[in-house]
Each structure stands twice: as C-alpha cells, then as structure tokens.
Length: 383
Image 1: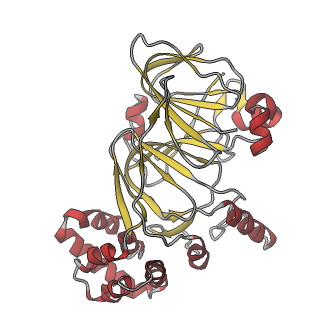
Image 2 (image 1 turned 30 degrees about the horizontal axis):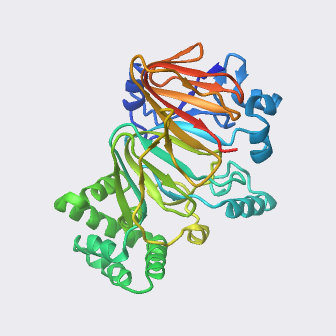
Image 3 (image 1 turned 90 degrees about the vertical axis):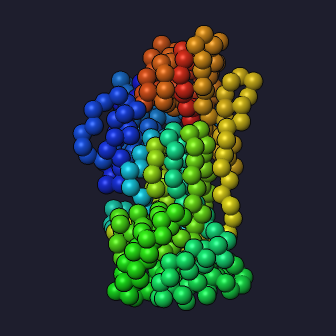
C-alpha cells in the first residue's frame, strides 16, 4: 500500500480556498482547481517507491491484478480528482469510445502534434465521468426541453435572440436544438458579442433563474457559450449527491467542491465558455441532441457499510464509507486496484493514517482494513 503525493493543477477557474481548507493548509492566493490521484502521465501520483505510472508499467499484473489487465490493458483505467470550481468551467462534451478511436487515428495520420491547440483527440479513449459533491455544487447538464429554453431566453427581451426562440419551438425537438446550437456557434462574432452584452445586462437585471447566466457573461464576455448554456438543465447537488456524465452529454461545472472520477482520458470537445479551440463540425457530430432531466445519483448502501454510486461503465466504480467512532472494520481487500481518498475525520487504511485530502493506492489483492471515524471514498474498477 502506498501513500500518494498528488499534484494540484492551478487552472484559472479553480477556487483559491476550497482545496486548502480540506487539506488544512494555508491558501497561496493562486487558484487550486484539481488534485489528481492516479497514473495519468500528465501528473502521476508519487509514492515512496516512485511515480505510480512507472510502478504499474514495471509490473502491471502485480499492481492491477490479472482481471483488470485482461480487461483494460496494463494501465490504471481511471483518474480520481478533487475538483474545486471557483469560476465556471468550459461548456464541453466527451466522445464515445468508437468516436475517440476514430478521431485519434485520423489526427495521428494527419500528423497533428498531440499538444497542438487545435488537436481534439489526445488519446483513443472515451471519458465518462462522475462528480460527487462535497459542498453544494452548481452545474449544467444535458439539454432542457426546448420550449423551456425558449421561455428562458425570451424573458431576456433581446431582439437579436428572437430567431433562436422561434427555432426552439420547431419540431422535432432534437433538430431544433441542433439548429440553434449550430447557429450560435457559427454566428458573426461581432454581432454575437453585442447580443451577449445585451443578454448580460438583462440577466443581471432579472436575477433569479437568470442570475447564473449573468455570472457566465461576466467571466466570458462576448462568448456564444453564454447563450448556449441556457439550452442546458441547471443542476444543484447537495453534499453526497452525484451526477454521471456519459458520452455526448453537454455539461459545465459552475461552482463547488467535489470528488470526480473518470476514465483515464483527456478528450474534450468544447462548446463555449472558453478561449480554447472549438471544433464546431466535430462537436456537432458528437453531441447527443436529446432533451432530458439529469438524474441525480444518491449512493446505495450495502450491508457491509459501503455506499455505491451505480454507473453503467466498468472503467471506474466509486463508493464511500461514512464511519462512526467504534464501528467494526471494513474489509476492503479486492482483486482490483484501489485508490482511497479521505475527506473527513481520521481513518486508517491498514497501517496508513488518513486525514482529509490524503489518499493511498492499494494494489490488487492487498489485504486492507478500514478503521477509525470519518468519510473515505473508494475508487476501483469492475473486472
């Protein structure tokens, strides 16, 4: 079992206080957006035996177990994070596995450097993800009913938005959403900047349900993603609640601290709220224009005390243990690799003591008991 030393990524949208408060450290004044736990080559966790990705590469069966290696190959198939949004993230969507494989192969064949700003597919993997709130957490996820979106946009009273409102009343709904998003992302930039400025002023004046879009416009003036965001459902998670995001579902995180787990990929297609490259044709090919209500997940308790967040994929499985003082130990021994992340209290995984924000990697087959009082998240795979 290895205590992990993890990298904190200082992305501009990160909170300056949320991760330091959890870790019990002094804020630096700089944004601290994500703390990565895993073997992603961009920021692998470090252990007393070396970098986690190098340990796994040296002996994948020992570290991951035979079943995981047979199913996913000789790599840790998930990445666990603490995510602290102090400002809105980009509006984005992820490809499915077939789209990622085809897109990556095409860009490799075209000789596009993997670090090029216009590169879309940096690897050949999909990126389903799950975010579980540690604090009240605000986000956008999936398309609203188009008529509801039309009402929200119409209430702004901006003349240049009326054509979009009219389109949203058309049928079928999927075609209406596609046409509006396409029109927003291909509109004249100067005209759209003026429209967003008017929408910003109106949303500021109206407040209420429009207040989040005034905030978006404050951070991303002139960005068509401000209007595109109104096409999506707003979701507010309470601590312990989670949201699963599959392929093709547009989403953005707005504010809050959470535990995030995802397939080990960096494939992101952006729709807006970003200065980065937006590949409109590829984006429109990947997005699923299906209006629906996002399903908020709550953990399902088992007799062992493990509370599991059920998802439809195998690259990760997230659960938590909320332990009281004096509770019987939880046996966590498993044939698959695990990362344990403590978020409250003081617990022990085997001989390793964990305070809030501390984590360990448990190789497959390692005998492990969880004791003490506190809350611990467990990330592993289904194999």
